Length: 481
Figure 1 (cartoon, rainbow, N blue to C red):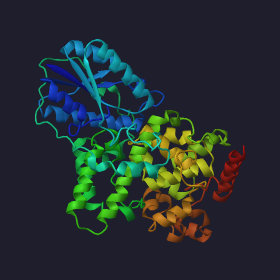
Figure 2 (cartoon, rainbow, N blue to C red; figure 1 turned 90 degrees about the vertical axis):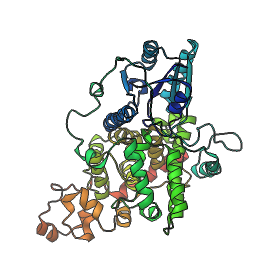
Figure 3 (tube, rainbow, N blue to C red; figure 1 turned 180 degrees about the horizontal axis):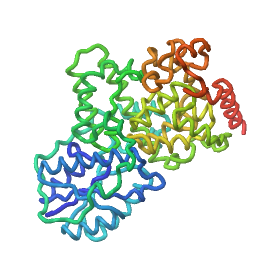
Figure 4 (tube, rainbow, N blue to C red; figure 1 turned 120 degrees about the vertical axis):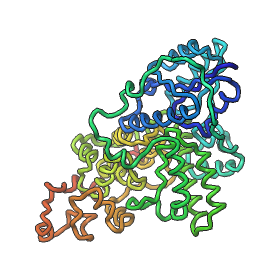
């Protein structure tokens, strides 16, 4: 084959990119293209934080391509129409891409593959996003898994047989000529109001940064991961989630680096840290497994009983939660971290989600929508699994209705009060005893530090105990209905 198009989506890397490697192996010329078509992902088009990351990730990918003699062509509009146009322009004989697993993407890609093949073109799709295809791992009865532990046990038995990660090419031959396309600026991905300053301080999108972050975490954080991963006050997690979502790094690369670190590192805790960390990678696999087999779970409860749960509509409480103004320090700290950085520690994600769905009894879909717009690692499969798991209506193995107490969680995981003091400076001057529950602070201390409850920092918008009781009552109601 003379010329092949590589259609980039959320596989924005050159290393371990199966579609890119396949095109290189059978074509003399390669034409890399990204087609911006958020309307095709409706009703879940990328949120604002995701668009910010996408802009910088595409910039990094284009730079990597240019260093090897090529460039990224940017198109916008209907994917099939733009691919057909580009095929005609460059006289391509094949189109290669890596698979996506969201319901809308699956339907679109099937249509595109069929349409291209009908014209005699080679149209190939590959797996670049997951360790295992969602249809590859099954129960003994041939059914999809519904519980994580047996799913990951089954996956673990297959890990050793995975092929090695593919290497990136040193050079890329691209047809000569000027091809029509958009500039990245023309896609309107960046915010018009500068709310992204905190993003720049924490993140550097792109394949190179993803590899640096992975290597640094394995060298410095893996040994302490088992004990440190629940501490939001420490940089004990990998923060690879946005890099994985946008395909700047592959799960096979992560697995290989973790295994290499275990072989070569003698630090105490390295083996247990690796096992726990890979289990978290397994949760990502499980999320996509569930979404593929149960696509309705983006909007409907996995447990159908929850269709009758007595959710509460409270726009004022929802707004307070979104703004980090609930009066519950750990909840507010998490929501402010999210707004300023596009990210939130996983332990805190569970706490803020539990507070919204259990203490306030606001529908989990409201939280899912907010996370979708504000997280740089917003992923449809992970978002649906996480929110449904915390709300109690998802693939939950626990035989009880889990409700996180945000005060007890703060006392256990923010022992030194550093996380809350960082994100809620209003309460930073309080004695340690009152930081996690400022509403119990004696007036004499409040006067001394000039803190006015309800004005400088909100009073709690709900009573935790009564909210818990109402949530349990709602759960009992759907159990008997």
